[in-house]
Length: 492
Image (cartoon, rainbow, N blue to C red; front, side):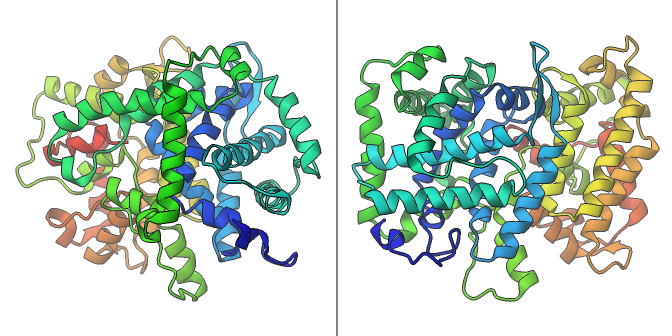
């Protein structure tokens, strides 16, 4: 890292010559991100937000992947891409508020909590280098810390800051670490994150083989993360270090370091791994994509990938030719029940409430890269739909809806709010504003938002607004089926 550390004082702290830019594009950044997320989850406010509002419980791998790709966008060579991502994160976090199980309020936009997020990434990056046998001299460490300070300043320009010097940072970090708690989110992440890693291409048609391998590798990966934490913190978080895991941890960190130094760069890039685990993921092209709009869209492509529950919308828009439509009340209820558990229950807590619908809106908005106006329209439509559901189904007034309640009345839930949700999706897909979604726009919708090239079926049709809305309402009522996309429900 000495070449990055030698950059001049006027160098862009988050640009292509920065240490952080290079780190976030290496596969071993996954070690940093995973460890940091565990430390973040132990923060009372962040842990509560993850449990009550995030999709981490139901889809932890997707959440980790999005976090990694968001970090890449925050250090993109184009400052406009960085600012766009920072703005997106600010809008997202501002909507995540509530109280934890003990009645303590939390706010994802809290400056102290956001400073802790960046602090954990910096400390985990330093730990990765140390465990990998790499030494960071004084200038290199100062340079890396300055880059993380710039990272936080971009993400939270009017809020919290990291201490001005490294000496003060380590005192701050030790003090903050003492306030960490044994939260539910910590154990959810460690128990479920590696249980949902998608299969690589060679094993995609052998789910049993991949499941068996993942059953062994998953606990080992979690044990590596736990072993990298300080002993005092492990005790506070109720995490036991298993015999032999420290040796396994050192082997993992050293091997990733050696691979980074000895193998061709293309083999150790994060893009390579993302492509292997997600064939629809397209590595960012940086060959002079200079036009502002084009470059911004290209650099943002990565984060649009991997929506696990996009299978729901895929079923809506690309039904198979042999799709069987439910014709009886019982079959409609069964379909709606499955839709509830696999799609609507985004937070994985067994019931439907506002955080679930807000999570759906966040996923759609970020994948489609909608602007502020369309994002506000989307959230407003989901909020109105939630009010409709409460009025019709929340008979006991407890602020949530069970799967049985939803399934029993799903066929009648085609209200005006759902129509508005469909219209927002139609508007952001109809890029030429001719009130018809043609084959090109249709394919673009799936490639950028849903990680899928539809290939046939509706892909060759011209969908009018009315037809698009009709199919959306039919899907949300649980009346559309598509066996070809069932496997997408279980992917992270």
